[in-house]
Image (cartoon, rainbow, N blue to C red):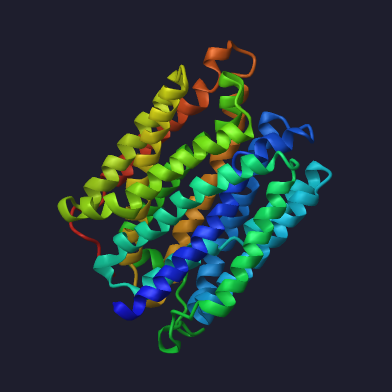
Length: 397
């Protein structure tokens, strides 16, 4: 494993830089879209269209990476992300914002390709811990990204998007010069060996259950992230800078959990029990968010959400990776990310529609409908997770 440490650290750096750019956008985009007259419903579509495109593209990119390797797919996706951010910063109308999000979504195979990379260079029993590295990179990206995005709005409302585009371009340069290919030629899938979706699903009954659980959890979590900036603006008068700091706090919680705490928990608890606990905490945190009365309670409830997500996401992705043959890693992880992307499309769409139900009501009820609906969806995710076997998953079971 000593030889594999350097590539793992490099892929961690790649995801970290990528997530800084992604985190920059989260607290800014809903408020940026308002400058173009976007309603709550339109904002939901704007956030969700990115994931709708990912839903279509992720399995294809995963399949492609099984054939040509992880590195070229990662390069193309990062360059597409850079182009999308630059167009977003230069946009003058809502139409161009949507075009930018579509481009970014189609090329957005960054995370799924990085996860396939990790699956290539780690042993099956170490997958969940290694996937925790992705989660830690997520957390750190959310620490710096939203804070940077909030601060850069003082330059201009479009400055965060140009900065994020520059980061994505820099990331592509680092991948080109520093990151070695992880998938050797003998382990690549040829045209003759390519499996149909039916064959992949028949390979193990666990995969549809994992995808269903992941999809539902992402729907609930996306409802929260889509509406959070509008919720805090309405309830507490917070702007992009304040929301950037709060998302940075959530990122810090995630980085601490997935960067160290999760590894200790894995030594004492089964993966299924950790995923179940994550679902329960996510549901509770989302249900409590509308009850926030001040900054202290808001931070407490968002911390519960962050801890729950940190326990659930890397475990589910690790289990999915372990249930697939080595040659199908990119395809299976692409399918998981496709399920997540579908959730990130459905979630924002529901978020905009549900939040519009609270728009004309009393201020203290604003955000209650979408957050409570998200908590209910997490209960459904919990029921799916409970169907998983207690023992570790292995390919072909």
